[in-house]
Image (cartoon, one colour):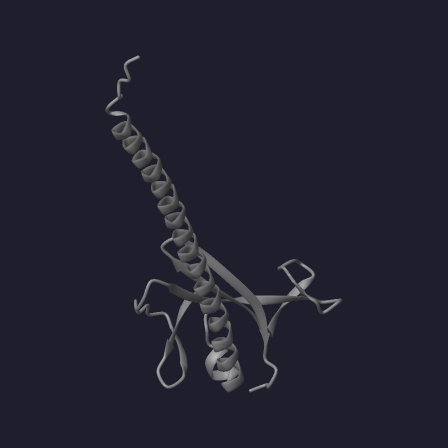
Length: 157
């Protein structure tokens, strides 16, 4: 019996092995890419939430400094932008400085005449001049986040 050696099988095995390894690498790199994008999106959401909370804290600072000078003169429904210049200030002039845009909006707050609870505007409610609704909105390329609260004139200043 004559033994014949088959040639080319080793080359075929090498090509198939390389294809399997390449497919596995593409899969691993794709999943890594997806996780990086997800992490970046989550980072932006966290930054936006922190900027919105910082906006509300800045308004609390302005309230504590002087309700009469800093809060009472502001127009309801107007978008204001926070600026830092040795202290917080509010302005209707927008200054672009990064990938996020933060606006602060003030709206009237209504109290039920009977229960004195904060309610939506209705016939049995009146405007509470010592309470306002403050909304901080942060907008970026891939989304928006909004945080709202009520502030009262605690210090009567």
